[in-house]
Length: 140
Image 1 (cartoon, rainbow, N blue to C red):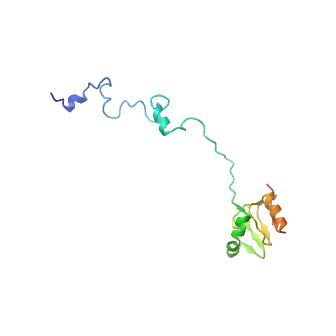
Image 2 (cartoon, rainbow, N blue to C red):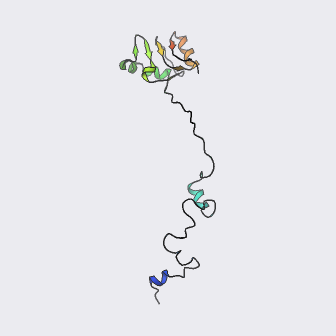
Image 3 (cartoon, rainbow, N blue to C red):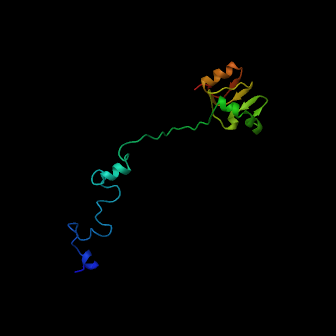
């Protein structure tokens, strides 16, 4: 005898209860419920880093726009065309840079204006006779 759909949905779902075989009911919790228990395999496969503390957020971040001596030599002509270099004075503050780093070489005789510079950059430039001018302390 063929069982109709209505009879099928009324019960007899092999120990699952009456309505658990259809619809959205009896899923074992909503959202992330059960990740430590019956949804452990889902957790291991899809979200391994769910538990625990991961890193931190620094609330005292400061934005630095730094430039190296090598980049300065590469961008020298471009900075000159934009008007940031006049009479052998390179105004990196006005160009938007906040710190001068010491990697690379720069040996064009000039005076550099910038807020901060590393000790390595100052030493390299002083060997070529280039001076750095800034409002604040030049070392960091």
